[in-house]
Length: 389
Ligand code: SF4
Ligand code: SF4
Image (cartoon, rainbow, N blue to C red; front, top):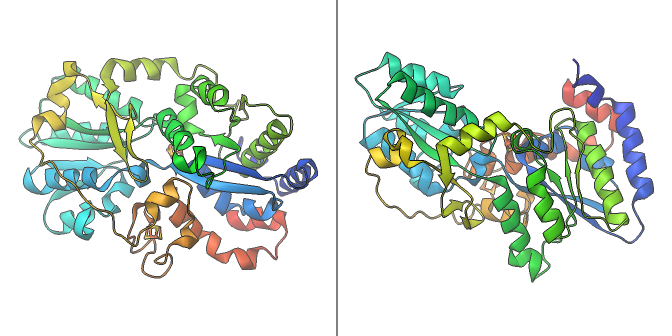
C-alpha cells in the first residue's frame, strides 16, 4: 500500500538503525520524548527500542487524549448518561475508561443508561435527528485532530435547526501540554526527567502545522522533529534529532512532509476558531491544571453546550493510589514501574486510562513490550515483518 509498505521496509530500518548507532556520540545520552500516543504504539509494535543503541532512550509523553482526561470529566459524562437521561454518544475507547468507584460508561450502559458508541460526530447528529424527543449529547474528546469534526457538527446542528443535540466538550491543546512538561520541576529543577528532544505529533500537526512548535524549539532550546507513524518515520525522526543534538541545534524539522505543512489545514483551523475559545485552564491527568490548554464552546453556540444545558455536579475525584498513570503521562515512570501492570491491570481489566486506549503507554507496552525478551533475539527486519503478521 502506498505510503505504508515503503515505510515498513525491514532492510531500510536496519540501515537507519546503523546510521543512528554510528552518529551517536560515545558517552552522550539522548533522551527523546514522543509526545503522541500513536508514536508510542508504533515504537512498541515495531520493536524500535531493540533497534536503538543504549545511549538513545525513548520517553513516552502524554499524547493520548483518552489517557489524559481526568476522572472528574469521566464522572460528569457518566452523570449525564445516568442522571439526565440523555443518549450519550462517544468514541469506543472512552466507554471503557474507569471513572470514580471503578464506574465506566460501559458499566453505566449495563445498568440501563443509554450510551452509544459512534464512529463520527455525524453519527451523533444522525441519532439526534432520529430521536427528536430525546436529548443527545456527544462526549467530545481529543487533541487538535478531532476538534474540527466536533466544530463541524455544532455548526451543522445550528444550520439544520437541530435542537436536541449538544456537546460535552473536552478538547485539549498539544502545545500547552508540551510547555507544561518543559516547565515541570522534574525537567527544570530536579533534572529527574532529562529531555533532549521531542518527536512531534503526526495527526495533530496535519491540522495545526509545524509552526506552533517553533516557540519550544527557541524558548526551551529543545529540538523537535515532526514524524509520521510508520517505523521508518520514527527511526528517521530519531536520526534527525540525534543530528540536531550533536550539532547543538534546536529547530523544528518536519519528517512527515507528505502530510504536514508549516501552516497546517487553514480551513480546519478556521472552523475551530469560529466555534471554540480557550478555557482559562483545564485539568489533565498527570499534569494537573494546565493554563489555556482546553477549549470550550463559544457563547454564540451556547445552545449546543452540554455544560450550559445541564446542571452538572461540581466534583473532585481521586486517582486509584496504586495506578501510576499520572507519573507515566509526565514521562517520569514507565508502565513496568507500576505494581499492577500485567497482573491486576490488563487491557481486559484496565485500572487506569493508560491501559484502555491502544495508544496508551501501558496498553502498548502490554500488547507488544511484554514479549521483548523473546523479540530481542530476533533481527530488526524480523521484528518488522512479525509485527505485521
Ligand atoms: S489521535 Fe493521533 S495525534 Fe492524537 S494522540 Fe492519538 S495518535 Fe497522536
Ligand atoms: S498498569 Fe494500569 S494501574 Fe498501572 S499505571 Fe498503567 S493503567 Fe495505571
